[in-house]
Length: 322
Ligand SMILES: NC(=O)c1ccc[n+]([C@@H]2O[C@H](COP(=O)([O-])OP(=O)(O)OC[C@H]3O[C@@H](n4cnc5c(N)ncnc54)[C@H](O)[C@@H]3O)[C@@H](O)[C@H]2O)c1
Figure 1: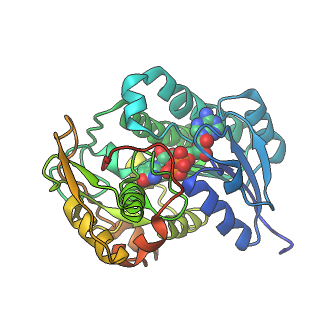
Figure 2: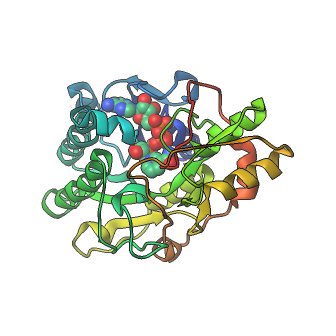
């Protein structure tokens, strides 16, 4: 381990993206702590070389840990990440996504150190965009409490940067896919289709399947997070100044995704067509010129990345391209 190894906290480190990130930081020689309440994460995702704390991010114990250790990097991946839950219970969403974030930010501000890397969502902060692929400066039209909370989170981060001196980067992820993704998750269409293909069960498609999404592999998202933890950043004010889209920039329809997965699996599946979901975005893809200028670009093409995306079975029944 290098003498100057960084102290890195990953909230949500037992989850899909956070656990990959924990492995990557360990591989960089960092010391890694994880705070996770295991609401959707799994203990078996947690790498053994990390210090794991079974805590809620909104708890005083989590804040005390942050104040005590004084982290160099706080990678804030923990979230109530299901749009449908946020619609059914906005208060529950806000307890984690607003109050939990504020608890973390207050403690980081008090500890007087570190940079916060925030997992935002390009799939929800822009809503139905006029311009696709959508750049960071586009109008923000979140259409769910989850989207409102992600955008509010970025605004809080900007406030803490301007007034309390907390450095931050917000990464607006596209639809992330890859190994360990829960097929019951909100944005897990790749995992859901992949599992159904393996099991020879029909693929359920809502609407005509022409709705598009931007799929980015978790390895590319991890690389963006590692870069965000140390990149030189603009000192311009405003939330967009520190926001970076992380996506492929490519629109892929649900029908095309099904074709790609079928080709990858060398198998075909029956497709079942359901009513379109009210409020579902028609088109979504992220412009990535801004993060590319920092030296990042997606390395994993969808056709190559889908192979490892089939996750452990859980309770998912449908398909929703978030
Ligand atoms: N997966 C995607 O496509 C996608 C897209 C855009 C943004 N994001 C964001 O990326 C982050 C990671 O998402 P993911 O796909 O890995 O989801 P995930 O559900 O696998 O991971 C979230 C983790 O946070 C933990 N958690 C939730 N509430 C908590 C709380 N109150 N206290 C402590 N831990 C808590 C969960 O147990 C889980 O381990 C989230 O912030 C999510 O909103 C994900």
